[in-house]
Image (cartoon, rainbow, N blue to C red; front, side):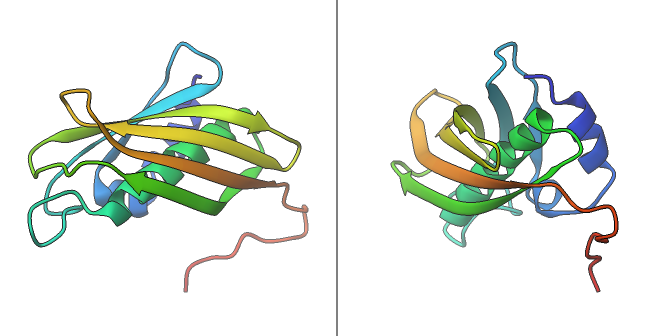
Length: 145
């Protein structure tokens, strides 16, 4: 899935994906997307391992980018994120998330996201459901205060 346009849009704004060090990658398959994230001081727990919350954030963000790419002109918000953490990842390693579209409905998208360490071992499996919204022309986007 080509996500270049979406990545250009989000690269110019601050947010969680930038704060945690996520990098989004297009894939040749039409219903998949990838992202990487180096485990460092931005996303580790005090013990030096990748935070489980950071893993779930990676999964939700990569699935969100995928839904945005599938539905230009609309927005996607995560409404359910459920994950299972399998092994710990030490600081200094890089994790890769591969998201596969499981269901593409008119307003709901479901993604299966598998996160692996640099040795290819499964770190975390996550299911993400996105709600896809079309903003009305007279409905302004809410700005951060």
